[in-house]
View 1: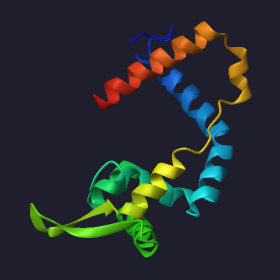
View 2: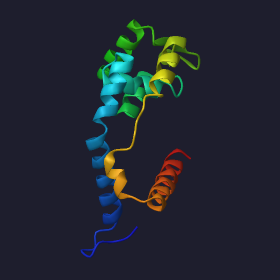
View 3: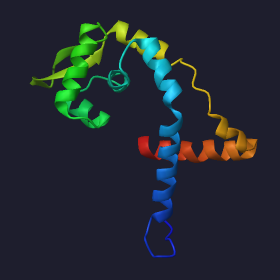
View 4: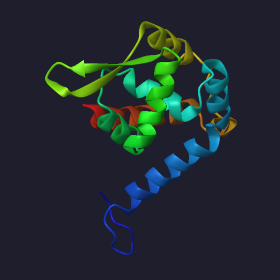
Length: 148
């Protein structure tokens, strides 16, 4: 990592992260609204649906992945269960725990929701094709590092 002139290690990486996070947060509203309209779910419940879609998970692990507390995750899972989108089963490796997984209906709702159009904001018009390709390469590298 590079250092800023003041000698703070990682300043450039932190600044890049802040800029990227703020840009996405500031421009994701239309997609969130479309997603809520398409699924009929509050966005926080949709976030849980997406995380459960990766595989069966405990409430505690789901809460940690969604950066919410366990009681909030329980409320969200209860709502997903009421709608027939998720179910709790006993963990076969630890019968004291429950695992949350998607039902067939939940998988279908998630698959449909993920086809919601999510066009790049108009700010991308400031980039040429080579810059967009470089941005894709860099973000793909970050993603592979985080998930690999």
